Image (cartoon, rainbow, N blue to C red; front, side, top):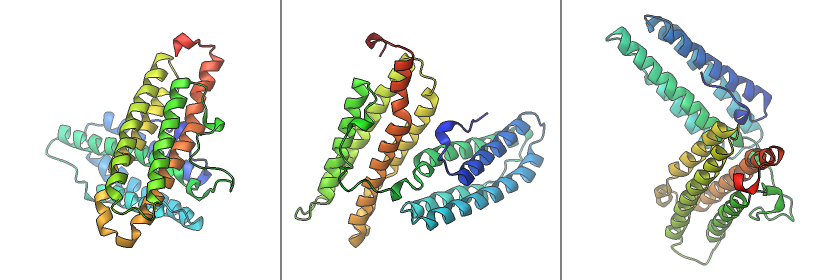
Length: 282
C-alpha cells in the first residue's frame, strides 16, 4: 500500500485532506484488484469515481492558487491536464483476466507515482512562491538558519545556493548578450551537483538508519525530475518572456531547496543529535 506520509503534507487542510483521499481511493483499487478474479467491474466502477474526484480536487487546488495569485498556477494546470488525459485515454486490456489485472495495476502504479511526484515537486510549493523575504535578507545567502550541523551536507547545500545565485546574477546581467548558452550550462551543472548531493545525503541517511529515508528519497526524486523536465530549448520561442520564465524558474528552485532544507534536511541533524551519534557514524 502507498502511504500518505508527513512529507506529503503541504499544510493547507482542504488540499491535504483531498490528497489523502486520492491515496485512499488508489489503495482501495489495488486491494480490490488483488482479491478479485475479474477486475473489469472494478475498473468500470472505481475509475470513473477516481477521475471525478481528481477533477474536483484539481478545481479546488487551482481556485485556491488563483485566490493567492500563485505564479505556479499555469504549470499546475498543465500537470493536471496531463493526469486527466491519462485517465481519459486509458482502455482496459480485456483480452484475458490476467491481462486486465496487469493493465489496471499498471495504471494505478502510474497514478500513485504521478501523485507522489506532483505533490513533492509542485503542490509542496503552493503559497511558498508568494512569500517574500525580508527587505534586508539576501535570499541567495546560505545563512545559519539552513545549517543542519552535518558538515558534508551543509557544505553541499552552500554550493547549491552558490550555483543558483550564479544563474540568477547571469539572468539579470543586462549588458551581456547571448547569455542563454551559459545559463543552460549552469542549469546543467546545478542538476548534476544536485544529483551528486542527493546521493551523498541518501548514503548518509542509510548509514545512520534514518527513519525518514524513504520520504527523503521520494522528495529528492521529484525535484530531480523537475530539473530534468526544464526545457530551455523553448526559450527561443518565448521572445520577450524569456527573462520572466527564467526568473520564475530560479525563484522556484531556490524556494524548493530552502523549504526542503528547513522542513526535512534539518531533521537529519536533529536525529543525529538525539541519537547521540558520533562523528565516525556520519
